[in-house]
Image 1: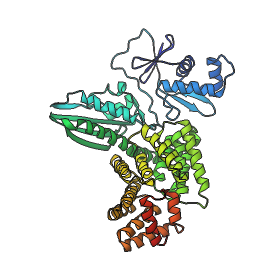
Image 2: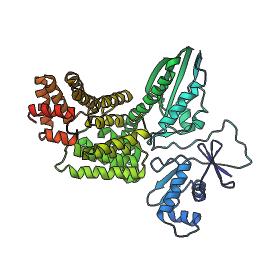
Image 3: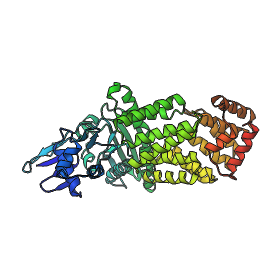
Length: 516
């Protein structure tokens, strides 16, 4: 008897796990545990029962069981955050939640028979389909598989998104396949599709992100190039798609979660709802965001991203001085970020939030080091890229800061931190003495959603340096109204520019002239 789920086949008699026909190596205890869970998918298995069956009732530590669970999850492309195959049922044990078919060894399955997995209602999931190639040209039909394959590889780095393997999604080559069919057959909530038009040396690529429940298009883009620009446009397609997923899927998930009865909202839904409030950068929304992250952790205590989100709320409390004692929320931010990284050290959002703790501690080198980790994991992480612009600016590397901030805005033109990206670019220009351009950018930043009192303060300084005295006074007044305690000392505590850096010297003069 074979146990089949997704792209995997489990053959207990042969002691083999295969993915798309290829053998997946596993240690004996992890393999035996996977068989036990898959063979009992209809029920929860307690830790005691697992120890009895796998270790013959011998005494083993909790860490030994946890290690076997982690190894089993890793073998089937699962992890403790997603739990799309093996789910932790807290206080009870573990359950195999992927849809399992039992196939007798002698049976032959018709080619058009597909398993119908249960839709995973928590972790957002996506399939990337091969792009049909229309026309003839210099590129050849293989590019219709090459670009989607790159997209699958890049999207798989997003720890919050379950990406169906190429072996499954590339079976659906018919452009007439409906989103509903993909939802039924692959169990995904989203599909990224597109087409390629070729005419001689020219190529045009169109992409769409579609909801499989309604068929609604929630993002699309179009690219054109010739033979000489194909490598550049492939990179642009991948980076644009990654950034679009970071913005549009969480927004859509939060919108769907708001329509649910509160009792139906799961950990991931709470996480996405928390994100919607987190980036508004005001105290009431920050409290709401923290509450959503805490509720997510009540449901799933090992949810790394929720710990990282909670760290962000504590960081925001310290950064925007929502309380009297900055040290307490900063310590809480560090604790939550450390917990997130302990659970999933390969989550860029977890690394990013650890970096931000070091930012507020004034440790610019550690700030940059943790950001480097985040960007190594996901080079297309726009907020990590913007933060690297900050780190560069703190040490006076103004050209590098502008490169990072420009790249961040290119990656995510509609990012909720767009105002901060403009502001950090402006501060680099202040360091170079281009006060007029800096003032223009900061003024734009002030009018974007989420802009806080520090954005007004930076704009006031830029206008003062540019000689726009009336606008400088106006922005300074707004900053004081939004935070009566704001001062130059507070600013340079929260933005730890090193002594002697030109941006610091110019801003110190401007803020002193404005009475800060």
